[in-house]
Amino acid sequence: MGKVAVGAAVVVAAAVCAAAALVVRHRMRSSGQSAKALAILRELEEKCGAPVGRLRQVADAMTVEMHAGLASEGGSKLKMLISYVDNLPTGNERGWFYALDLGGTNFRVLRVQLGGKDKRVVKQEFDEVSIPPHLMVATSHELFDFVAEALAKFVSSEGEDFHLPPGRQRELGFTFSFPVRQLSIASGTLIKWTKGFSIEDAVKLNPFAVSPQVGEDVVGELTKALERVGLDMRVSALVNDTIGTLAGGRYYNPDVIAAVILGTGTNAAYVERAHAIPKWHGLLPKSGEMVINTEWGNFRASHLPLTEYDQALDVESLNPGEQIFEKIISGMYLGEIVRRVLCRMAEEAAFFGDTVPPKLKIPFVLRTPHMSAMHHDTSSDLKVVGTKLKDILEISNTSLKTRKVVVEVCDIVATRGARLSAAGILGILKKLGRDTVKEGDNQRSVIALDGGLFEHYTKFRECMESTLKELLGDASDCIVIEHSNDGSGIGAALLAASHSQYLEVEES
Ligand code: ADP
Ligand code: MG
Image (cartoon, rainbow, N blue to C red; front, side, top):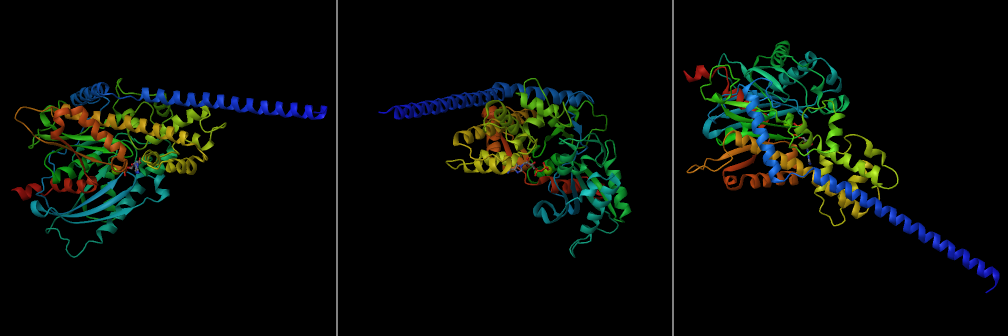
Protein backbone atom coordinates (compact mmCIF):
# COMPACT_ATOMS: atom_id res chain seq x y z
CA MET A 1 0.00 0.00 0.00
CA GLY A 2 1.40 3.43 -0.87
CA LYS A 3 1.55 6.23 1.64
CA VAL A 4 -1.43 7.98 0.16
CA ALA A 5 -3.51 4.87 0.30
CA VAL A 6 -2.50 4.24 3.91
CA GLY A 7 -3.35 7.84 4.79
CA ALA A 8 -6.74 7.54 3.12
CA ALA A 9 -7.47 4.29 4.95
CA VAL A 10 -6.61 5.90 8.27
CA VAL A 11 -8.89 8.85 7.54
CA VAL A 12 -11.75 6.57 6.55
CA ALA A 13 -11.25 4.40 9.61
CA ALA A 14 -11.19 7.46 11.83
CA ALA A 15 -14.35 8.78 10.24
CA VAL A 16 -16.07 5.43 10.71
CA CYS A 17 -15.04 5.39 14.37
CA ALA A 18 -16.24 8.93 14.88
CA ALA A 19 -19.57 8.16 13.26
CA ALA A 20 -19.93 5.02 15.33
CA ALA A 21 -19.14 6.97 18.46
CA LEU A 22 -21.80 9.51 17.53
CA VAL A 23 -24.38 6.81 17.02
CA VAL A 24 -23.48 5.20 20.32
CA ARG A 25 -23.63 8.54 22.10
CA HIS A 26 -26.96 9.32 20.46
CA ARG A 27 -28.30 5.92 21.46
CA MET A 28 -27.02 6.36 24.98
CA ARG A 29 -28.59 9.77 25.17
CA SER A 30 -31.86 8.63 23.74
CA SER A 31 -31.94 5.61 25.99
CA GLY A 32 -31.23 7.94 28.91
CA GLN A 33 -34.03 10.11 27.65
CA SER A 34 -36.48 7.31 27.25
CA ALA A 35 -35.54 6.10 30.72
CA LYS A 36 -36.33 9.59 31.97
CA ALA A 37 -39.68 9.58 30.12
CA LEU A 38 -40.49 6.20 31.63
CA ALA A 39 -39.56 7.50 35.07
CA ILE A 40 -42.02 10.38 34.60
CA LEU A 41 -44.66 7.87 33.50
CA ARG A 42 -44.09 5.59 36.50
CA GLU A 43 -44.17 8.55 38.86
CA LEU A 44 -47.50 9.64 37.34
CA GLU A 45 -48.88 6.15 37.76
CA GLU A 46 -47.84 6.04 41.38
CA LYS A 47 -49.22 9.49 42.23
CA CYS A 48 -52.53 8.80 40.47
CA GLY A 49 -52.94 5.44 42.13
CA ALA A 50 -56.41 4.90 43.57
CA PRO A 51 -56.44 1.49 45.24
CA VAL A 52 -59.61 0.34 46.96
CA GLY A 53 -58.43 1.40 50.41
CA ARG A 54 -57.86 4.95 49.29
CA LEU A 55 -61.20 5.05 47.44
CA ARG A 56 -62.95 4.01 50.64
CA GLN A 57 -61.26 6.90 52.44
CA VAL A 58 -62.44 9.25 49.70
CA ALA A 59 -66.00 7.88 49.95
CA ASP A 60 -65.95 8.26 53.75
CA ALA A 61 -64.71 11.83 53.43
CA MET A 62 -67.50 12.52 50.93
CA THR A 63 -70.09 11.19 53.40
CA VAL A 64 -68.63 13.30 56.23
CA GLU A 65 -68.69 16.44 54.06
CA MET A 66 -72.27 15.72 53.01
CA HIS A 67 -73.31 15.60 56.67
CA ALA A 68 -71.44 18.82 57.40
CA GLY A 69 -72.95 20.62 54.41
CA LEU A 70 -76.46 19.57 55.47
CA ALA A 71 -75.84 20.67 59.06
CA SER A 72 -75.19 24.34 58.34
CA GLU A 73 -74.81 26.90 55.59
CA GLY A 74 -71.12 27.02 54.68
CA GLY A 75 -70.42 24.02 56.90
CA SER A 76 -68.55 22.21 54.16
CA LYS A 77 -66.90 22.54 50.78
CA LEU A 78 -69.99 20.66 49.63
CA LYS A 79 -72.74 23.24 49.38
CA MET A 80 -75.51 20.63 49.71
CA LEU A 81 -78.02 23.07 48.29
CA ILE A 82 -81.69 22.56 49.07
CA SER A 83 -83.42 22.36 45.68
CA TYR A 84 -87.01 22.74 46.93
CA VAL A 85 -87.81 19.80 44.70
CA ASP A 86 -89.93 17.76 47.13
CA ASN A 87 -92.21 16.27 44.54
CA LEU A 88 -90.42 14.21 41.94
CA PRO A 89 -92.51 13.18 38.95
CA THR A 90 -94.42 9.93 39.35
CA GLY A 91 -95.59 9.29 35.82
CA ASN A 92 -99.13 10.49 36.54
CA GLU A 93 -98.48 14.01 35.21
CA ARG A 94 -100.69 15.20 32.37
CA GLY A 95 -100.80 18.13 30.00
CA TRP A 96 -98.42 20.30 27.99
CA PHE A 97 -95.24 21.71 29.53
CA TYR A 98 -92.25 23.68 28.37
CA ALA A 99 -88.57 23.49 29.31
CA LEU A 100 -85.59 25.70 28.70
CA ASP A 101 -82.05 24.35 29.12
CA LEU A 102 -79.36 27.00 29.58
CA GLY A 103 -75.83 26.74 30.79
CA GLY A 104 -74.18 23.76 29.15
CA THR A 105 -72.59 23.86 25.75
CA ASN A 106 -75.92 24.65 24.13
CA PHE A 107 -79.26 26.25 24.75
CA ARG A 108 -82.46 24.31 24.06
CA VAL A 109 -86.19 24.80 24.22
CA LEU A 110 -88.53 21.88 24.60
CA ARG A 111 -92.26 21.17 24.61
CA VAL A 112 -93.79 17.92 25.89
CA GLN A 113 -97.22 16.46 26.13
CA LEU A 114 -97.61 14.17 29.14
CA GLY A 115 -100.33 11.55 29.00
CA GLY A 116 -100.31 10.05 32.51
CA LYS A 117 -99.25 6.61 33.74
CA ASP A 118 -99.97 4.56 30.64
CA LYS A 119 -99.15 6.97 27.88
CA ARG A 120 -96.23 8.84 29.50
CA VAL A 121 -94.56 11.21 27.03
CA VAL A 122 -97.07 11.43 24.19
CA LYS A 123 -95.22 14.04 22.22
CA GLN A 124 -91.93 15.86 22.46
CA GLU A 125 -90.62 18.70 20.31
CA PHE A 126 -87.47 20.74 20.69
CA ASP A 127 -85.36 23.40 19.11
CA GLU A 128 -81.70 24.22 19.62
CA VAL A 129 -80.47 27.78 19.47
CA SER A 130 -76.91 29.06 19.45
CA ILE A 131 -76.06 32.33 21.12
CA PRO A 132 -74.67 35.05 18.81
CA PRO A 133 -71.14 36.04 19.89
CA HIS A 134 -72.01 39.66 20.70
CA LEU A 135 -74.45 38.45 23.36
CA MET A 136 -71.76 36.40 25.02
CA VAL A 137 -70.40 39.50 26.68
CA ALA A 138 -73.67 41.39 26.93
CA THR A 139 -75.79 42.18 29.98
CA SER A 140 -78.21 39.62 31.33
CA HIS A 141 -81.03 41.90 30.17
CA GLU A 142 -79.93 41.47 26.54
CA LEU A 143 -79.13 37.82 27.00
CA PHE A 144 -82.51 36.96 28.53
CA ASP A 145 -84.29 39.02 25.86
CA PHE A 146 -82.66 36.81 23.28
CA VAL A 147 -83.70 33.69 25.16
CA ALA A 148 -87.27 34.97 25.58
CA GLU A 149 -87.53 35.77 21.88
CA ALA A 150 -86.33 32.28 20.98
CA LEU A 151 -88.94 30.84 23.35
CA ALA A 152 -91.69 33.04 21.86
CA LYS A 153 -90.74 31.84 18.39
CA PHE A 154 -90.86 28.23 19.56
CA VAL A 155 -94.26 28.80 21.20
CA SER A 156 -95.58 30.14 17.91
CA SER A 157 -94.91 26.72 16.37
CA GLU A 158 -97.44 24.99 18.66
CA GLY A 159 -99.50 22.53 16.62
CA GLU A 160 -103.24 21.99 16.34
CA ASP A 161 -103.10 19.39 19.11
CA PHE A 162 -101.69 21.81 21.68
CA HIS A 163 -104.17 23.03 24.22
CA LEU A 164 -104.30 24.26 27.74
CA PRO A 165 -107.42 24.19 29.89
CA PRO A 166 -109.09 27.62 29.76
CA GLY A 167 -107.56 30.34 31.94
CA ARG A 168 -104.22 28.58 32.34
CA GLN A 169 -100.77 29.93 31.66
CA ARG A 170 -98.13 27.92 29.91
CA GLU A 171 -95.67 26.52 32.46
CA LEU A 172 -91.92 26.25 32.06
CA GLY A 173 -89.19 24.25 33.76
CA PHE A 174 -85.93 26.16 33.62
CA THR A 175 -82.66 24.24 33.69
CA PHE A 176 -79.78 26.48 34.65
CA SER A 177 -76.60 24.53 35.27
CA PHE A 178 -74.62 26.70 37.65
CA PRO A 179 -74.73 26.82 41.42
CA VAL A 180 -77.84 28.70 42.44
CA ARG A 181 -79.00 29.52 45.95
CA GLN A 182 -82.57 28.44 45.69
CA LEU A 183 -85.20 30.51 47.50
CA SER A 184 -88.16 28.38 46.45
CA ILE A 185 -88.86 25.85 43.73
CA ALA A 186 -89.09 28.68 41.20
CA SER A 187 -86.62 31.32 42.36
CA GLY A 188 -82.95 31.54 43.13
CA THR A 189 -79.80 33.62 42.86
CA LEU A 190 -76.54 32.80 41.17
CA ILE A 191 -73.73 31.86 43.57
CA LYS A 192 -70.69 31.60 41.31
CA TRP A 193 -69.51 30.45 37.95
CA THR A 194 -67.77 27.11 37.51
CA LYS A 195 -66.23 25.24 34.59
CA GLY A 196 -64.20 28.33 33.59
CA PHE A 197 -60.52 28.27 32.78
CA SER A 198 -59.79 31.48 30.90
CA ILE A 199 -62.22 34.26 30.17
CA GLU A 200 -61.85 33.82 26.43
CA ASP A 201 -62.24 30.09 26.45
CA ALA A 202 -64.90 30.18 29.11
CA VAL A 203 -66.91 32.50 26.94
CA LYS A 204 -66.43 30.27 23.94
CA LEU A 205 -67.49 27.25 25.92
CA ASN A 206 -70.08 28.86 28.00
CA PRO A 207 -71.60 32.19 27.11
CA PHE A 208 -72.99 32.62 30.59
CA ALA A 209 -69.56 32.88 32.15
CA VAL A 210 -69.86 36.61 31.77
CA SER A 211 -73.51 37.35 32.19
CA PRO A 212 -75.71 37.33 34.20
CA GLN A 213 -73.91 38.57 37.30
CA VAL A 214 -73.35 36.67 40.49
CA GLY A 215 -76.20 37.34 42.94
CA GLU A 216 -78.74 38.01 40.24
CA ASP A 217 -82.27 36.61 40.53
CA VAL A 218 -82.23 34.22 37.60
CA VAL A 219 -85.96 33.55 37.31
CA GLY A 220 -86.83 37.20 37.91
CA GLU A 221 -84.64 38.22 34.98
CA LEU A 222 -86.17 35.59 32.72
CA THR A 223 -89.72 36.48 33.79
CA LYS A 224 -89.16 40.16 33.02
CA ALA A 225 -87.80 39.24 29.60
CA LEU A 226 -90.82 37.00 28.92
CA GLU A 227 -93.06 39.95 29.75
CA ARG A 228 -91.07 42.24 27.47
CA VAL A 229 -91.65 39.93 24.50
CA GLY A 230 -95.31 39.53 25.47
CA LEU A 231 -95.16 35.82 26.21
CA ASP A 232 -97.67 34.56 28.79
CA MET A 233 -95.60 31.88 30.45
CA ARG A 234 -94.76 31.11 34.06
CA VAL A 235 -91.55 29.60 35.41
CA SER A 236 -92.79 26.78 37.65
CA ALA A 237 -89.46 25.15 38.44
CA LEU A 238 -85.85 26.28 38.47
CA VAL A 239 -83.40 23.39 38.50
CA ASN A 240 -79.96 22.43 37.26
CA ASP A 241 -79.05 19.67 34.81
CA THR A 242 -78.31 17.21 37.62
CA ILE A 243 -81.71 17.63 39.24
CA GLY A 244 -83.35 17.52 35.81
CA THR A 245 -81.57 14.21 35.18
CA LEU A 246 -82.78 12.89 38.54
CA ALA A 247 -86.37 13.89 37.69
CA GLY A 248 -86.12 12.39 34.19
CA GLY A 249 -84.77 9.14 35.64
CA ARG A 250 -87.39 8.95 38.41
CA TYR A 251 -90.25 9.53 35.96
CA TYR A 252 -89.54 6.18 34.34
CA ASN A 253 -88.10 4.33 37.29
CA PRO A 254 -89.25 4.84 40.91
CA ASP A 255 -86.00 3.27 42.19
CA VAL A 256 -83.90 6.22 41.01
CA ILE A 257 -82.42 7.87 44.12
CA ALA A 258 -79.56 9.93 42.72
CA ALA A 259 -78.19 11.45 39.54
CA VAL A 260 -74.63 12.14 38.50
CA ILE A 261 -73.43 14.29 35.62
CA LEU A 262 -70.09 13.55 34.01
CA GLY A 263 -69.76 16.06 31.19
CA THR A 264 -67.77 19.24 30.85
CA GLY A 265 -68.12 19.52 34.61
CA THR A 266 -69.38 17.09 37.22
CA ASN A 267 -72.10 17.19 39.86
CA ALA A 268 -74.43 14.92 41.81
CA ALA A 269 -77.90 15.24 43.30
CA TYR A 270 -79.82 12.78 45.45
CA VAL A 271 -83.04 12.31 47.35
CA GLU A 272 -82.61 13.03 51.06
CA ARG A 273 -85.02 12.43 53.91
CA ALA A 274 -86.16 15.93 54.80
CA HIS A 275 -85.78 15.38 58.54
CA ALA A 276 -82.10 14.57 57.96
CA ILE A 277 -81.40 18.13 56.84
CA PRO A 278 -80.64 20.12 60.00
CA LYS A 279 -80.27 23.39 58.10
CA TRP A 280 -83.77 23.02 56.66
CA HIS A 281 -85.89 25.70 58.35
CA GLY A 282 -89.03 25.36 56.27
CA LEU A 283 -92.07 23.18 56.71
CA LEU A 284 -91.34 19.51 56.25
CA PRO A 285 -92.62 18.62 52.79
CA LYS A 286 -95.60 16.30 52.52
CA SER A 287 -93.52 13.74 50.70
CA GLY A 288 -90.93 13.78 53.50
CA GLU A 289 -88.26 14.00 50.82
CA MET A 290 -86.07 16.75 49.45
CA VAL A 291 -83.68 16.66 46.54
CA ILE A 292 -80.22 17.94 47.49
CA ASN A 293 -77.84 19.40 44.95
CA THR A 294 -74.44 18.43 46.35
CA GLU A 295 -72.25 20.54 44.00
CA TRP A 296 -69.70 17.77 44.55
CA GLY A 297 -67.34 19.24 41.97
CA ASN A 298 -66.03 21.40 44.80
CA PHE A 299 -65.21 18.39 46.99
CA ARG A 300 -61.64 17.96 48.17
CA ALA A 301 -59.98 15.73 50.71
CA SER A 302 -56.46 14.92 51.76
CA HIS A 303 -56.99 11.40 50.40
CA LEU A 304 -57.41 12.57 46.81
CA PRO A 305 -54.47 11.38 44.72
CA LEU A 306 -53.20 14.72 43.39
CA THR A 307 -50.11 15.35 41.27
CA GLU A 308 -47.89 18.31 40.40
CA TYR A 309 -49.86 18.57 37.13
CA ASP A 310 -53.14 19.03 39.01
CA GLN A 311 -51.57 21.61 41.26
CA ALA A 312 -50.24 23.63 38.32
CA LEU A 313 -53.54 23.34 36.45
CA ASP A 314 -55.40 24.57 39.51
CA VAL A 315 -53.06 27.49 40.19
CA GLU A 316 -53.33 28.65 36.58
CA SER A 317 -57.11 28.24 36.46
CA LEU A 318 -59.71 30.98 36.81
CA ASN A 319 -60.87 29.50 40.10
CA PRO A 320 -57.75 28.36 42.00
CA GLY A 321 -58.45 26.25 45.03
CA GLU A 322 -61.98 25.51 43.92
CA GLN A 323 -63.66 22.61 42.14
CA ILE A 324 -60.73 20.29 42.88
CA PHE A 325 -62.76 17.07 42.45
CA GLU A 326 -64.10 18.40 39.14
CA LYS A 327 -60.57 19.27 38.01
CA ILE A 328 -59.40 15.66 38.25
CA ILE A 329 -62.56 13.98 36.99
CA SER A 330 -64.46 15.95 34.39
CA GLY A 331 -64.29 16.30 30.62
CA MET A 332 -63.11 19.86 30.75
CA TYR A 333 -59.81 18.89 32.37
CA LEU A 334 -58.78 15.28 31.57
CA GLY A 335 -57.23 16.13 28.20
CA GLU A 336 -55.45 19.11 29.73
CA ILE A 337 -53.86 16.95 32.42
CA VAL A 338 -52.58 14.60 29.71
CA ARG A 339 -51.15 17.58 27.82
CA ARG A 340 -49.28 18.73 30.91
CA VAL A 341 -47.71 15.30 31.43
CA LEU A 342 -46.64 15.07 27.77
CA CYS A 343 -45.26 18.59 27.97
CA ARG A 344 -43.05 17.67 30.92
CA MET A 345 -41.84 14.58 29.06
CA ALA A 346 -40.99 16.77 26.07
CA GLU A 347 -39.14 19.31 28.21
CA GLU A 348 -37.24 17.01 30.50
CA ALA A 349 -36.81 13.88 28.40
CA ALA A 350 -36.86 15.22 24.82
CA PHE A 351 -39.76 12.82 24.40
CA PHE A 352 -40.78 14.24 21.02
CA GLY A 353 -37.27 15.11 19.81
CA ASP A 354 -34.75 17.83 20.55
CA THR A 355 -37.25 20.66 20.73
CA VAL A 356 -40.49 20.91 22.62
CA PRO A 357 -43.35 20.97 20.07
CA PRO A 358 -44.73 24.53 20.33
CA LYS A 359 -48.37 23.44 20.13
CA LEU A 360 -47.92 21.20 23.14
CA LYS A 361 -47.37 24.30 25.25
CA ILE A 362 -50.83 25.72 24.55
CA PRO A 363 -53.22 25.12 27.46
CA PHE A 364 -56.32 23.09 26.62
CA VAL A 365 -55.34 22.30 23.00
CA LEU A 366 -55.68 18.65 23.75
CA ARG A 367 -59.37 18.13 24.50
CA THR A 368 -60.84 15.12 26.26
CA PRO A 369 -62.50 13.75 23.09
CA HIS A 370 -59.01 13.67 21.46
CA MET A 371 -57.62 11.90 24.50
CA SER A 372 -60.50 9.43 24.37
CA ALA A 373 -59.90 8.73 20.67
CA MET A 374 -56.23 7.96 21.36
CA HIS A 375 -57.07 5.85 24.40
CA HIS A 376 -59.48 3.71 22.36
CA ASP A 377 -57.09 3.19 19.45
CA THR A 378 -57.09 -0.55 18.74
CA SER A 379 -54.92 -0.53 15.59
CA SER A 380 -51.67 -2.48 15.91
CA ASP A 381 -49.55 0.55 14.95
CA LEU A 382 -51.66 3.00 16.99
CA LYS A 383 -52.55 4.90 13.87
CA VAL A 384 -55.16 7.09 15.56
CA VAL A 385 -52.64 8.20 18.18
CA GLY A 386 -50.20 9.12 15.40
CA THR A 387 -52.86 11.10 13.54
CA LYS A 388 -54.04 12.97 16.64
CA LEU A 389 -50.48 13.86 17.66
CA LYS A 390 -49.89 15.17 14.16
CA ASP A 391 -53.19 16.99 13.64
CA ILE A 392 -53.53 18.55 17.07
CA LEU A 393 -49.99 18.95 18.32
CA GLU A 394 -48.13 19.00 14.99
CA ILE A 395 -45.87 16.19 16.15
CA SER A 396 -45.01 13.89 13.24
CA ASN A 397 -43.06 10.68 12.81
CA THR A 398 -43.65 9.32 16.26
CA SER A 399 -42.39 5.82 17.01
CA LEU A 400 -44.71 3.06 18.14
CA LYS A 401 -42.96 3.15 21.51
CA THR A 402 -43.74 6.82 21.92
CA ARG A 403 -47.38 6.28 20.97
CA LYS A 404 -47.68 3.48 23.49
CA VAL A 405 -46.49 5.80 26.23
CA VAL A 406 -49.07 8.42 25.17
CA VAL A 407 -51.83 5.81 25.46
CA GLU A 408 -50.56 4.86 28.89
CA VAL A 409 -50.72 8.47 30.05
CA CYS A 410 -54.34 8.68 28.85
CA ASP A 411 -55.11 5.44 30.64
CA ILE A 412 -53.63 6.56 33.95
CA VAL A 413 -55.45 9.91 33.92
CA ALA A 414 -58.82 8.46 32.84
CA THR A 415 -58.59 5.57 35.30
CA ARG A 416 -58.00 7.89 38.22
CA GLY A 417 -61.00 10.04 37.23
CA ALA A 418 -63.26 7.04 36.75
CA ARG A 419 -62.28 5.38 40.03
CA LEU A 420 -62.77 8.61 41.96
CA SER A 421 -66.21 9.08 40.39
CA ALA A 422 -67.12 5.62 41.67
CA ALA A 423 -65.85 6.57 45.14
CA GLY A 424 -68.07 9.68 45.04
CA ILE A 425 -71.10 7.55 44.24
CA LEU A 426 -70.21 5.19 47.09
CA GLY A 427 -70.13 8.27 49.37
CA ILE A 428 -73.72 9.10 48.44
CA LEU A 429 -74.87 5.50 48.90
CA LYS A 430 -73.23 5.47 52.32
CA LYS A 431 -74.99 8.69 53.28
CA LEU A 432 -78.29 6.98 52.44
CA GLY A 433 -77.32 3.71 54.12
CA ARG A 434 -77.67 1.89 50.83
CA ASP A 435 -74.08 0.68 50.43
CA THR A 436 -74.59 -2.64 52.20
CA VAL A 437 -76.96 -5.56 51.90
CA LYS A 438 -79.51 -5.66 54.67
CA GLU A 439 -81.14 -8.83 55.89
CA GLY A 440 -84.41 -9.52 54.09
CA ASP A 441 -84.18 -6.33 52.07
CA ASN A 442 -83.32 -6.33 48.44
CA GLN A 443 -84.35 -2.78 47.74
CA ARG A 444 -82.83 -1.61 44.47
CA SER A 445 -81.07 1.73 44.17
CA VAL A 446 -80.73 3.23 40.73
CA ILE A 447 -78.38 6.08 39.89
CA ALA A 448 -79.15 8.05 36.75
CA LEU A 449 -75.98 9.06 34.89
CA ASP A 450 -75.63 11.51 32.06
CA GLY A 451 -73.11 13.78 30.35
CA GLY A 452 -70.82 13.60 27.35
CA LEU A 453 -67.92 12.07 29.24
CA PHE A 454 -70.02 9.20 30.57
CA GLU A 455 -71.77 8.75 27.27
CA HIS A 456 -68.83 8.80 24.88
CA TYR A 457 -65.71 7.83 26.85
CA THR A 458 -66.32 4.07 26.95
CA LYS A 459 -63.18 3.12 28.87
CA PHE A 460 -63.96 5.77 31.49
CA ARG A 461 -67.51 4.51 31.88
CA GLU A 462 -66.52 0.85 32.06
CA CYS A 463 -63.82 1.57 34.61
CA MET A 464 -66.23 3.61 36.74
CA GLU A 465 -68.83 0.84 36.68
CA SER A 466 -66.40 -1.96 37.47
CA THR A 467 -64.83 0.07 40.27
CA LEU A 468 -68.24 0.65 41.85
CA LYS A 469 -68.87 -3.12 41.72
CA GLU A 470 -65.49 -3.73 43.30
CA LEU A 471 -66.25 -1.26 46.09
CA LEU A 472 -69.77 -2.55 46.77
CA GLY A 473 -69.04 -6.27 46.82
CA ASP A 474 -72.24 -8.23 47.54
CA ALA A 475 -74.32 -5.06 47.64
CA SER A 476 -73.52 -4.39 44.00
CA ASP A 477 -76.44 -6.61 42.93
CA CYS A 478 -78.84 -4.00 44.32
CA ILE A 479 -77.16 -0.94 42.80
CA VAL A 480 -77.79 -0.06 39.17
CA ILE A 481 -76.18 2.62 37.02
CA GLU A 482 -78.58 3.76 34.34
CA HIS A 483 -77.84 6.07 31.45
CA SER A 484 -80.54 8.73 31.55
CA ASN A 485 -80.12 9.95 28.03
CA ASP A 486 -80.74 13.68 28.06
CA GLY A 487 -82.99 13.30 31.05
CA SER A 488 -82.22 16.86 32.06
CA GLY A 489 -84.12 18.56 29.22
CA ILE A 490 -87.30 16.64 29.71
CA GLY A 491 -86.68 16.48 33.47
CA ALA A 492 -87.24 20.23 33.80
CA ALA A 493 -90.57 19.96 31.98
CA LEU A 494 -91.52 17.06 34.26
CA LEU A 495 -90.68 19.15 37.31
CA ALA A 496 -92.75 22.03 35.98
CA ALA A 497 -95.58 19.47 35.84
CA SER A 498 -95.01 17.96 39.30
CA HIS A 499 -94.71 21.48 40.81
CA SER A 500 -97.43 23.02 38.68
CA GLN A 501 -99.26 26.01 40.16
CA TYR A 502 -102.49 24.25 39.25
CA LEU A 503 -101.70 21.06 41.14
CA GLU A 504 -103.75 21.87 44.21
CA VAL A 505 -106.68 22.93 42.08
CA GLU A 506 -106.50 19.51 40.42
CA GLU A 507 -106.05 17.59 43.65
CA SER A 508 -109.00 19.21 45.43
P1 ADP B 1 -72.16 19.84 29.11
O1 ADP B 1 -71.47 19.14 30.22
O2 ADP B 1 -71.38 21.02 28.64
O3 ADP B 1 -73.60 20.11 29.37
P2 ADP B 1 -72.15 17.35 27.68
O4 ADP B 1 -72.85 16.64 28.76
O5 ADP B 1 -72.57 17.08 26.29
O6 ADP B 1 -72.16 18.91 27.83
O7 ADP B 1 -70.62 16.99 27.83
C1 ADP B 1 -69.68 17.53 26.96
C2 ADP B 1 -68.33 17.07 27.43
O8 ADP B 1 -68.21 15.66 27.27
C3 ADP B 1 -67.21 17.66 26.62
O9 ADP B 1 -66.74 18.85 27.22
C4 ADP B 1 -66.16 16.58 26.65
O10 ADP B 1 -65.29 16.79 27.72
C5 ADP B 1 -66.90 15.31 26.91
N1 ADP B 1 -66.96 14.52 25.68
C6 ADP B 1 -67.71 14.73 24.59
N2 ADP B 1 -67.45 13.81 23.65
C7 ADP B 1 -66.50 13.01 24.14
C8 ADP B 1 -65.79 11.88 23.65
N3 ADP B 1 -66.00 11.38 22.44
N4 ADP B 1 -64.88 11.33 24.46
C9 ADP B 1 -64.66 11.81 25.67
N5 ADP B 1 -65.26 12.87 26.19
C10 ADP B 1 -66.18 13.46 25.45
MG1 MG C 1 -75.23 19.22 30.02
